[in-house]
Amino acid sequence: MKKFLLAFATLALVATSNALSAQDIETDAAQDDSTAIFESLDANKDASLDKTEAAGDSELTEGFSLIDTDKDDRISSEEYKAHKAQVIKEGQAAS
Image 1 (cartoon, one colour):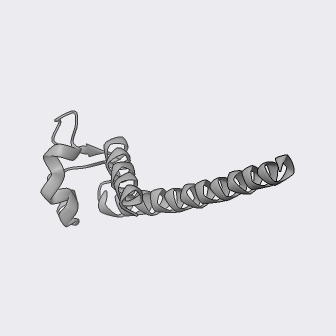
Image 2 (cartoon, rainbow, N blue to C red):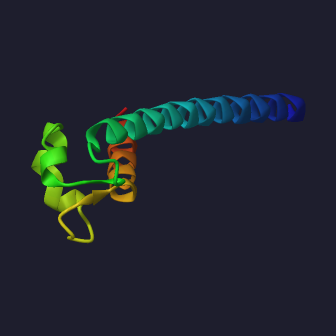
Image 3 (cartoon, helix red, strand yellow):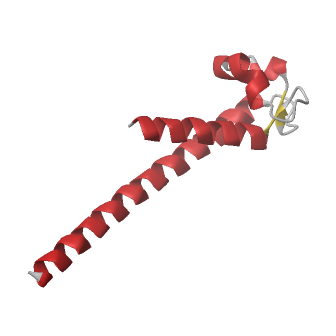
């Protein structure tokens, strides 16, 4: 019986580990995509998006004031990454 429980626990651990690894890979890929999107919107290549640059993405336009956490009328690459990470996290929680 102890061997059975040990085998079951090991299988459960492996299954959990594989699921977490798949989520990490998915998250990394989404973050890479986010970086490429940010760079494509950043027309003047100053590592931030003003409202004109953000107009190329309806999600940014609608949520600009929420994403711009330091309220400098620009979305920095860090603010953008934080926003996208939150979107990814919410998407994974809904799955």
